[in-house]
Image (cartoon, rainbow, N blue to C red; front, side, top):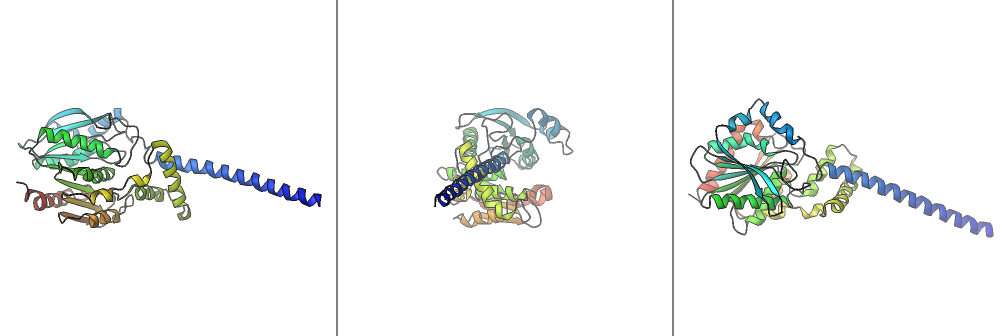
Length: 326
């Protein structure tokens, strides 16, 4: 009887020890996965070092910095309501105008990447403001938040432009995370309509989906996808103080009052085109359009055919913005 009792206790102790070891291993593995997801998204470091940016863009075949010499420019550090400054460049069109476009780059990029787009707007009679989002270049902020904090940065730039040109038209054109930022800003804008229209190229409808697509790209087995995303969410909450569920651009565009053009490639593996379709369907007014470009990937519309790309954009603006505000 005593031996049986001892065996029972021994088995229970073994079970407890095995359970503790299993939980410790699970915690360690979860921490590793969480950190990996965080470091490839919210905690992603700038892909090009500050000191290398000018050199790299000077050597590019399309000579974006060389073309910049044809315009009057102002290098600025604009104060954000988030208590840091945003490295910005205001480019004045050679056509006298009060209208301005703000261009918003994606994660890991910089405002230099926006210059090729800026020239099209400048030639059309828009001034252009490009800037480095938080955690980029000389801008403040120590991480990316997929629009949660970036929307307030963008709003500070919107106020800057409207103070400079109170009667001018103002548009925002965002790419990838920049499109997510612009989408989330549209809710802030619904209170005063300082921005007259948005162009959203390859946006995500919610952060969780964007992270999930990033995890899928790493070829992690399907059975582990939800677990890995959850690990990333928990680590992000611990590290940055917010949940993925706090970032839902689709809820913001639902409140928007101004024209929105959604652009998305049907072969986008970074952010599925269904994200744009979902948000398009949620916009309550009729001044909206969804342009799905067959066979191209993430933010590839401009590179695929820049002429067709901007013909579509300017046609949208002519039909939905200029017709109302002339």
